[in-house]
Image (cartoon, rainbow, N blue to C red; front, side, top):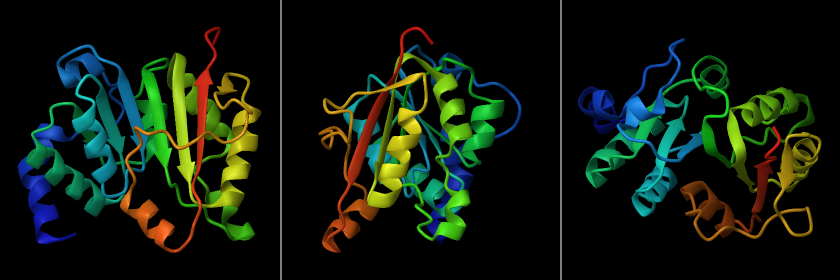
Length: 212
């Protein structure tokens, strides 16, 4: 971590941070209000999450990231922008979902550019696997949305197959394939670098059925 990122933990963790553990989250208590809750898993350096929170003050954002320098960077951005609708956890997202996020709590979940682990022998390390999809679906409210974006076409198609097989989720794209890039998703630094290298980007938008 940089010196500034270490300082961010010392100065801003108490304001924006939530400790990982076994205590269930109470969003109204955490944010001090009742508002739609958006979870971002693996926010990287947090720039796009901060931009979303700045653009949508009517929404509350919970970011979960295991990489401490990225968490430190988001703490700095949240403080600099004076954000009141962002909270941060430095933890494993699966453990957070299993142990702390109540069922039917999330209005939206977003996962932007997860590690694709492109080599076949490494693909078991991918975040988006059937158990994770089922867990995430359980945490979404009825009509809650799941938004995934990746610049790896092979991973995108694998994710599309997995989400199509989830009985609780319905593809929002008109052709039941990939969705057009939503205007509200700010480009990440990773995405912009990929575009300079000629990479494509695939967005997937699914909604949880009302009956689940």
